[in-house]
Length: 542
Ligand code: ADP
Ligand code: MG
Image 1 (cartoon, rainbow, N blue to C red):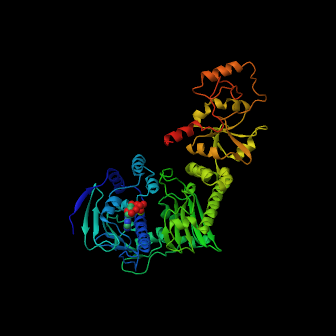
Image 2: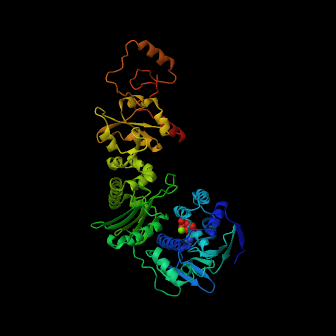
Image 3: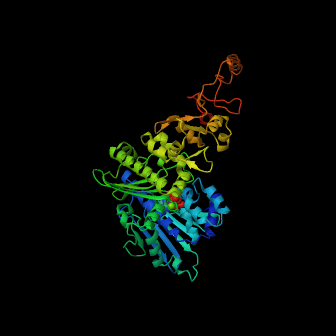
């Protein structure tokens, strides 16, 4: 056994731990599902690792989870014989919170008093939730294939100790030194086997590895893969619990999509539309949310072959019957059957959004607020479904500042004689509304779509029409709104002079019918970049 080091938690972690220790969050039971979920992940990882690396010196004969309550010592140990962690992994994974949203989480938790539970759920505090129920936590772990183990211990108060140990079994054991329980709160005595059994039943029944309790070999979870069961036999609560497991989001999903495909390529898919976007949805390394299983065996998380990037917010599981357990990401990308599955799942997801839009406007509004920008990326990424995606979009427009409109509504509402769909892109609604470009359209009673998302600049370049009607920027090219063309006679000399005088900054000065009260405005050529796009490209260094 090596020397014991005492290390400090990083500042954000310390704050988060303080919030856990003093948590007023009433549903403390969830610490158990967090630990079980970690153990289950560790078992998945071990199985995959031993498939990839057959030389790995590991025991994979009896992979399982174990709960060992001790009423006299007032401890609960949650053990797995999965992948384990090295000394350095313990320091980096348990001693710090690597997640980029932690700082934000801590700030929000401090500001809000009542909805901490929701916030905790949104960010998924995982391992740290142990400190809601324990005043000291000991973790002993040994990485598969390594000889030396690591012991970590902390009371959550600023520091932790870490040392090497020689006799650690493969995998990880987390021992909670339980806080005293109120005598009237026996339901939350986590040293009581009956309490543990009921919590597992409630939160972790579908975990695919056996969870044993005490000395008994009989698993206390049914291990039934939810996605393989007929829809009629799964309760909404079960779906939601499973959603939490795959998403680490404690808010119930907006919609559940359960697909059973039979035929030449059999698979089950259980997908969810979340009710809220993860904080990193628009960051470069945002992950996709679909896991791949083969015949109930976990193969990979973040399976990019199953759904396109713009649907990265969809969470869930696809379980395919006829794939090799050794299947790689590269093989999946090229597999024709996987491509067919992907096409079908995309249709399903878009169809589900469509149903929300037509039947559940409130849910659709939530969806749109959280994921609308991502969906718009689909106009560029997924041209095969462009028409369908266009129908799912909502826009602000000059018609009613307090409402949004679909393209269909815009088209149906437009006055007779209007043959194009008009839009203006910009940084904000205010900039757009003050634009002189709008004057003539206002005067004519033509509605203009107000596009303020950065992604709008990109898709409007590629989507030139909706239902056969051209989409046109009011800031580009010639717009011909007047009944008669502008009367240029007598202005030629003036225009030539002005074009010359401004030759450094503009290509041409011409008469226009697009203005009503402003004397002049600058417009782009029809195929020029818009100012915002120019800025975007410049910012990207192009
Ligand atoms: P999350 O599970 O969301 O990543 P946690 O706080 O629950 O966050 O865990 C942090 C990390 O610590 C995990 O991602 C994993 O790498 C590691 N970890 C936690 N528990 C275990 C375990 N039982 N076995 C192996 N690694 C673990
Ligand atoms: Mg976890």
